[in-house]
Length: 328
Image (cartoon, rainbow, N blue to C red; front, side, top):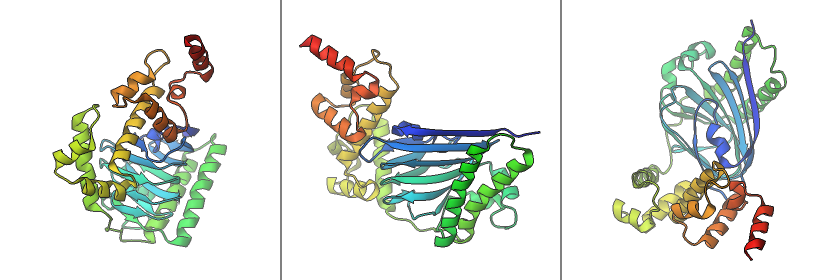
C-alpha cells in the first residue's frame, strides 16, 4: 500500500509566506532588510516527517514559540551576510538543532537559503540507527550547533537539493519502503555534518545584548499595539540610549529606532495584506501604528517593501488615479 507524499512548492511574495518556513510549524517573521521580498519555499511531507527548503532575498528575523512538540534540524545552505541563531554564529552548511517545545530566535542579515527537517523525537532511534550517540533521543533534547566540514557540508547541501528536486518530480507511487528510504536519505545528509563536528559548539556571541533585546521585546509585548518611543524604553529598563543602540546594532545590524519602525511597518504590511479593499484605509492602519505623517510613512513603506501601501491593500493603481482625478 502506498504512503501519501505531500509536495508543495510556492514562490514567496512578501515575508508572510515564511510563517510556514518549516512545514507543520508556525514561525513568526519580521522583515529586516529593505526591498520587496522574493523567494521560494518547498515542502515534502511523509507522515509526520517533513523537509522544507526555502530561499529569500532580504534580511529576516525568525522566531518560533515553544508550542511545537517536534524536533527540527536545520542546515544553512546559503548566506549573503551574517546568520545567527540564538547565540550561535552560523557558517555555510552548519547544522542547528531546535529541540521540541523550545523557543527559537534567528537573524538573517541578508539573502539566505536553508533546509529544515521536522520529525517526532520517537523516530530518532530508528532513523539515526548506526551511531549510538545520534540514535539516542536525549542527544536531541538540547539546542545545538554543529560546525560543518567544508567538503562534507557541500556534499550534504547538494544532496538535499537533489532529493527535494527528485521528490517534487516523482511525487506519485511512493511505497512504504521507498518512503522510508527517502526519509533516511534526508536524515543522512544532516547526520553527516553532525558527525563531523561532535561534540556540538557550546559557545556563542553577544549573550548580554540578546538578553537586553529580550527585555525590550517583553516590554513592547506588555505595551500592546500602542507606539512606544525609544526614550520610554530606556527609562523603563534603566539603560542608556547608547547601550540600547549598541545591542540592537550587534544583533540586528539596525539601531533601535530603525528596528522599531521596521517592526511597525511589518505589522502594517500584514494588516493590509489580510484586509479587503473597502474594509479599512491605509491612513487608518498607519495612524493606529503611530505613523501620523502619512507622506513620510508612504516613503518608509515603499523603501521597505518596494511597493506602495495601497498596492498591498489590493487597490489597483488605475483606480487610485481615477479617484484622484475626480477629487481634483
